[in-house]
Image (cartoon, rainbow, N blue to C red; front, side):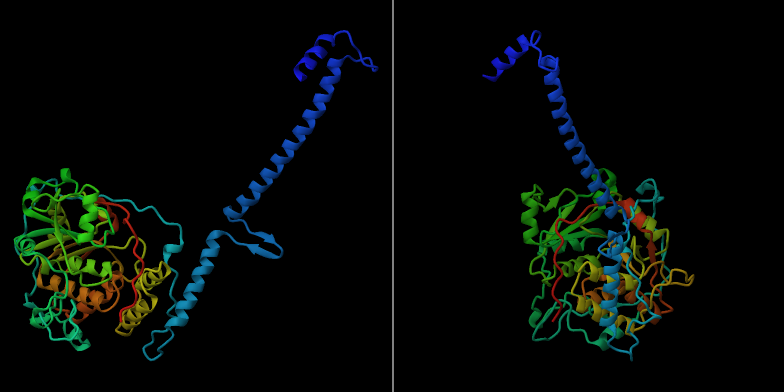
Length: 474
């Protein structure tokens, strides 16, 4: 056995010498030294190749240009830039369809790359000087010196294929932009014999919503999100008693939320949220269905004087009455919405929607070309006379007074979404600018506040799922 042999050699090593005059101990040490030398050299060679490989890959990812068989290995950021330049070239060639309308892209109307290609900045909240308490605020009397007018809505129409938004002609659409006594399309259009076209609610829920004077609303359709309950400790007792918090859901979402522990009580409440179940959804596109409660709160809450819309990806962390006081009463505004945190031009928004495949590209192009042919211009941040600080809103948070002008703007914006794409950021500036241009003596008092203020009032989360872009409308 080998152990016995080693012990024997060890025991006799003190008396035995080899022909060179060295004993066995020194001979074994010499052999082991050579063996360890070979192992050390092997390890050093491995380490050398490891550090060479590490340096090679670090050069690639740190942005150095390396020549490889006569070609450049470009940094990741430059590859993105080249890909986006190819996208711009594709869009340029795609929109060169009508020189008569001057909607082609040439050297004088170059579409800039959207800032989404750059490293995303970290957007932080900023200070919002709200009142200390609801006890320190008071609704001002006639804080809006506006000329009132009567606004009615198309309730029914005769059509072989009735639809929720109705069948508005281009002539009716053009007339609807005038701030005068009129009846316009604004959703909830029924077919002949009062045939339902969608967004059906129970009579019990309708009765509840009819009594709301101030409303905070949101929606989840298709189980697309989690339920974010308002921060109860931040909501005053006054608002808990006098403000309606309504979450619109479909049956699928209601079942999903219940499986996650959000089971409504006997009156339909989950915390502060009053769950209102919507049946017979008017659109197959869940995003477009979500525009109904987002834009048409004055129709869902017919007695409400003020409303706040909050996207389901956000949790309200501020008392709603303090929000209304700051963004409407103090600013003498009737509609308040924040600007987008990155983009301010519709041109950039078009490119970003197509780059991220947010909607069918053909439908986006048709909408964009229509708006350009009707006078939409690029946003100029250096223009001191610009009617808005940004042409692209962050539409996840809206505060409004239910005045005739605010209601008209909401209806017009919804009609654009109904006619074109569900990407409401594409139609916001066009709708607002056209309304202002056609009604110089009755302007909409819009307060476009900073996005950092929106972040100070809410807590932002990610959606549960990101739905695939819908097919283009037929």
